[in-house]
View 1 (spheres, rainbow, N blue to C red):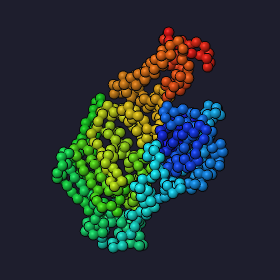
View 2 (tube, rainbow, N blue to C red):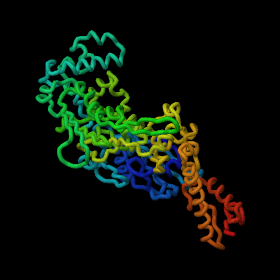
View 3 (tube, rainbow, N blue to C red):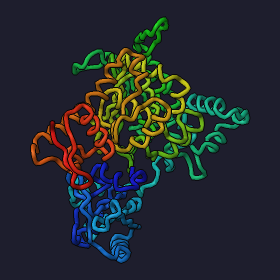
View 4 (cartoon, rainbow, N blue to C red):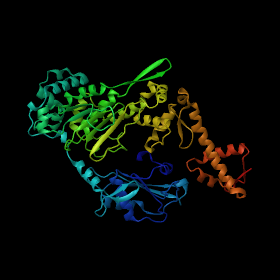
Length: 539
């Protein structure tokens, strides 16, 4: 998100919070306060401290005379914080009295919070507070080594299940096409994939290939529990199976259990009938793989897979891996158990790039289902709910209208933009860079300075061209009515153009002029005077 902020206009549209902070600082700004702000920004992942712009919306560029020698201030901040700080200055609309100074501070080092005079500052929303203890503990834990790559001193080759190893061998052979894998001894196969080392058997080997009795003795929390419940009522599950066995010995059985009650939804468009399963196999497998790859095996507790008629809930011990949150889960890949992830990638069960969650989101949108729900996730558990029912068959028609050739070129962010625009939801700031390419592809239309809508052809495909007209037309009509109301309220005093910019701060000056010309052409308003002396009046 921060890389896309390069101009004052970008800053004015940016949400204030853990990554960007606005301060008026018209005449001066306390250095110690600046250090605390930069400290918190660094601890939250890096960000910008902006001086000379109001923090309240609609934001105004007021200009700042603080830190007239920003090079010296930058050096002082680096010396105090021990992280990189840079700065940039802007003269808004070439007006030196409206100088904007932006300090950009880098993210904190891995495993170490940044402090100012012994206090690690933190932003909770836009509130500056001392770092909560739970956050501090999570940061310190980042320096820990990969648990799955550690050696289990009491384990031997006899603790590994032959069936699980051969299943892995076949998957790796199919993925790589390397026939040499077929003739490797069991021990050499496990050495080549990193499951065992010269020091001994890793915990990854136990988790992926371990025998039931061996896991019960050496790592009992490495267990997956499947439950099917026909209703939300409490009490015993209708079916329950427990798997304390290497993952390669049970992952196909887990999908079989889900697929036993996997109903099909039918969607017809013209003469064609499409079948959409309630539970998409790729989505279900990715959710289970994520749980196995990213759970904290030092926490007690099992991975739970709870299937209901219309949804699947996967719950795993341990919160998100360090550095991962709901806000960046689609942009960052940081496996908690790297050795497990690498072995799974060798045989094609997961992509080495770690895009499994992206696939879950993309397939959910393609099938017109609700996006994954992480309600119930905290520092100790990750819970993901996959809703299986297609909620809007007309959305499926929109997806089909876009066409496979264009769909194959779309990123996860592109799909999220389409989903947000179709359901008329606010568009997240970090998705705005995707709008230009979607507009060039003819999927999205630009109807105002910061207003976008799905192309009319997509709405027409589902008989909703009126929705397109409402979004475009009502918005334009409302803006003209607001201008007219303000001009009418000023009566014989007339209205300056600068006031009208305040009425519609989200529109460019040119867009407002176009609306005024339309009102003038409709004989509703007239202009007296020129340049800065010009005034608008109601007829």
